Image (tube, rainbow, N blue to C red; front, top):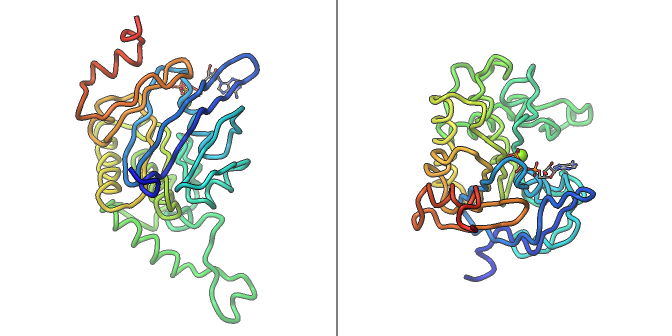
Length: 253
Ligand SMILES: Nc1ncnc2c1ncn2[C@@H]1O[C@H](COP(=O)(O)OP(=O)(O)OP(=O)(O)O)[C@@H](O)[C@H]1O
Ligand SMILES: [Mg+2]
């Protein structure tokens, strides 16, 4: 596999919180366009790993490469500038803003010409681009101008994912995208992830406790246990019960 097909490479990553070893010598790659699940029990190190890649936690040692370039993120802003977007469970949407205002939060499009001098926002242009982004994922909203506080958990998740896909160039990190959602809502979110896979050149790394959901959308599964990467599995080669055995440690006994 040539290096240009590798979006993310993590090499011997370690993270200690005092005496707690959250990650121990973790190494793996994610290829361009791949959808990879990150699974493991509570406290296994999943969020820590995602935060190291997203620039919100600094690793104790090890290397991270994005599109073949070694990166050293000290802030989430640096990771975003490099093309990595993250959707955390808390989502970080502004309740009283609508979809397009949330999509362009902090990156507003200013009008051109004289109005630009006064920092006047080009709401029409932002709305046009937001609608186009939503349509690309076939997501539907009863009212695209509604504030996100009026939306369901699934719709909010889709707004946050659309924002990630809109700004991200290489990698989208999703921490538990279906955790708080009901059956129908999860279905819509998984359908949007499916569309990412078919339409997008981005790679996805998805933390999930739900193996049914993992099975529906992922190509490969990484299993963390006690901070160690204990399995790196191609989905079509394994069963769900294999994955559970790796999560619980039954395979290592
Ligand atoms: N800021 C922190 N300070 C100290 N210890 C931490 C911190 N963040 C995480 N840890 C510890 O690191 C280990 C890994 O935590 P992490 O949050 O990465 O696990 P996780 O796999 O995401 O778990 P969950 O499924 O419960 O979200 C745990 O032992 C946790 O207590
Ligand atoms: Mg976590």
